[in-house]
Length: 172
Image (cartoon, rainbow, N blue to C red):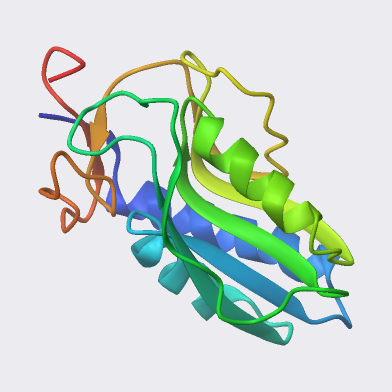
């Protein structure tokens, strides 16, 4: 499997994103919402570099099931624990692909009246985008390819790889 983004590149991008967030939210409190399962590694590394006060919550959504492409139906597997009204919220994703799941999540979160709502994605994969998603903080942009590693999985496997790799031949 070809390495698309090395552990060193991911580390530099994560630190750069945190620095940008630190600058944008100086003197404020950020509430990060990680989208499970994929974002847990990226979110953990990101918040270690965030120097402004922050808190973390998680949601778990699925539109893929065991497949490799979105079904178009979003299933909520775990909801937020804390209210977000009046808070500065950054949704953290490891990858934005079709955008369908994230679009629905952002709509739900916006209805809860946060002070601000932004998206931070390690990888913004634009080739299969079906929903307009504003990615405010982006580590890498990629047109297409099926990626695994650093939280990205294939049927729950390969999340533990320290880098991001392209599955041979694209879609499995």
